[in-house]
Length: 471
Image (cartoon, rainbow, N blue to C red; front, top):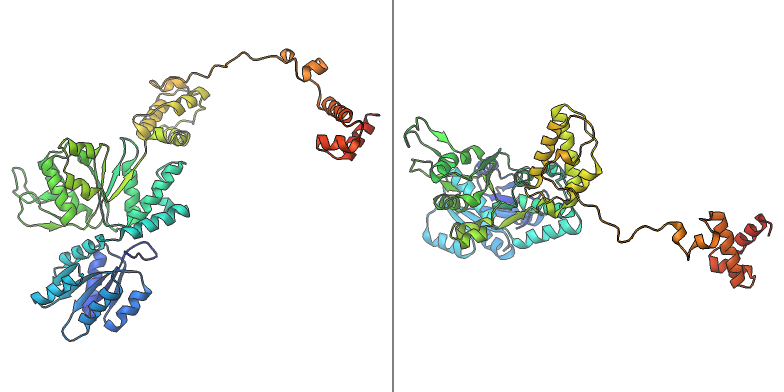
């Protein structure tokens, strides 16, 4: 799917009614779809498509215009563009012909605003994977990072992490869900927040850890409930899906969801629909959904603990964050960052750090990753009462045994083949120069040019050196 220069998909609205097309544009803007072009004169459609990176055309069919011919022309000359048709007529034959021509959705007017917004979002889901691969290739080859500020909270000098930043930028504007994987403490929520900032959605970022929630709590927390849905439900409650609105909903630790909750999550992802607890009326969601887990989902599928269809719905875009032990070059940077933050928090001076401690931290595996390092530093600063910070302030981290020399060091007097044997002591640089010139002249039978060539200097250099010593 073609992308505009700012990385977003562009929607083109075509309707002979200029007021109607403007209302639709405002509706899509409210739904978080910002790149919307409008045309009320169908003669301008093809030039507009040729001049702009249009991804989706929403075309209104009318009996007194050439809109049907225009649809055929778009499908013939621009097959990569997705098309939605709106029509005031419910003629079945027209609908069938449109769908056969490749139209992705056929809507009968008047269309409910939420239904139209959802149809547009679903259509934009059908992006071209080749475009995404091409964008990623360009990012990597040119070492591009257009939104470095979005990753400011993720401290790293790792080239591996920078590549992940670049992939994150590519998929951030996709309407598809993003699955973030990695061990506990690697910073999955920080990546989710970065995606939210880059995506351009105008709503808020809403986060929840779903681990340990039974189905009743999961449904009530995410979808809300109507008044009287259960004992104690004295008033209507809007869930987090509603709170996210046109923003981002981040669900952490989704690998621990029970099966009933997985079914409801799948419906939310596929249909963008949900039911508040106790309600028979379906609601729709336009929230961007990001999910995270620290468990091996394919292994959970084999164990029968995670739905295969849900997994395939999740893994369109997957970001795996490496453990801290896989990027040890980041440990010194993170340590310095956290020690400064902790010292500032506790109102203390930043202490000096022993070399022994730095060496031990560099070799430690950090099973709790970045979160563990931050917690250990914070605790160490809180307990520190002055002086150099040492390994004693970090209980549980083993000292690093320095490498043992393979053989004892030799004194200069033990060298029987080098300069010591020639001079009886370590010579000065001037004595070495005189010795080398003398040896070169012996080898060359007194030929200054040949001696200079052997030593890699000029003939004049040797001559001046000999004159300075009176030789």
